[in-house]
Image (cartoon, rainbow, N blue to C red; front, side, top):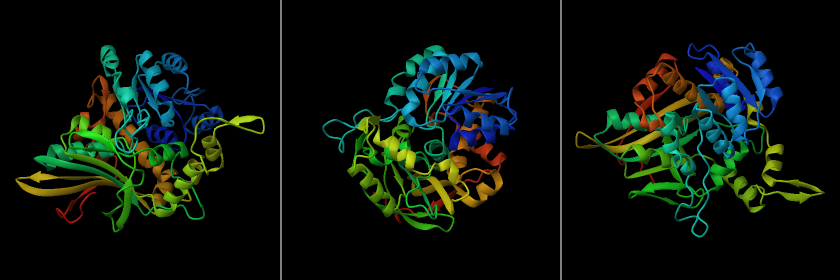
Length: 408
């Protein structure tokens, strides 16, 4: 398979390094707005012809199309901020290439009732083009990272094997991960952090989606691996719009263990207008406040050796098995220092990045195939989890006592 990888930041670098020795990878074109960063990674991986580096402007769909055609890319892998999803998505379609991303097209809050009903939901722009992808016989696999991604695979696996009836699906992202010595250092892109945490969170319930206030419904969730209870809050996330499209469930939520201090900092950023994306004039120069924030916030790719603790991401499913209540939590745990020691990669970048490589291997071998705009739930989860085992990637399932911890 020939892959055009757009973006070689924290996660893009992880994807390239994990793919470097894979048999399925014929070539991976490393494309980034910062050509020097792409060239540095290319040199580290042996350069052309397998890992050529190029400059790309991800805002330009025509440039995406031209580059994909020039390099005969079978698949365009989107590893940049969600604000660039649609240009890359449409550029890949025009090039007649398959497409994959780890975050879907952005939402737009309802103009009058943002904390009650959705406006434009996450992924709506992409799903509106499903027929166009089907007409070309090409696949757009959306939301194929860690969460969304592996969490959706866990949900599909539970529905297939562990339950006769699935009643609720709740993704919980937490652990005891920290970056000592930094007052404010998001573990991934500040743009993504702001979009996820300050947009109205979305919930699936009673056969439809609705929204709520950011950071609402705090809930103490008992994370495994000896971590124990950690407070999680509602955050806008893709699983809630993906899971109900393919799996029958009465309710779906996503909650993230952000921590009280981090939440207060995000609230302050919003109150000061530093999350704005419109440009303001400062000393004769027009600049977006969010770009200023991004410029002064530590780059997550530079903090790989600073992380301590563990990141746990998993899917809590409630339902019935053999007529009796059952609850399971399927999860992946990554230890920051171990990941840095083994792979030289930042833990969240590795944890996110190994999932697209698993999916690419499945597509390359034909174990997964399809056309149209599809989420991870649309595919058989068994080959995916089988490859995790083959490659020695930790994942586990714990039984939870039904009713002991109620989702809110």
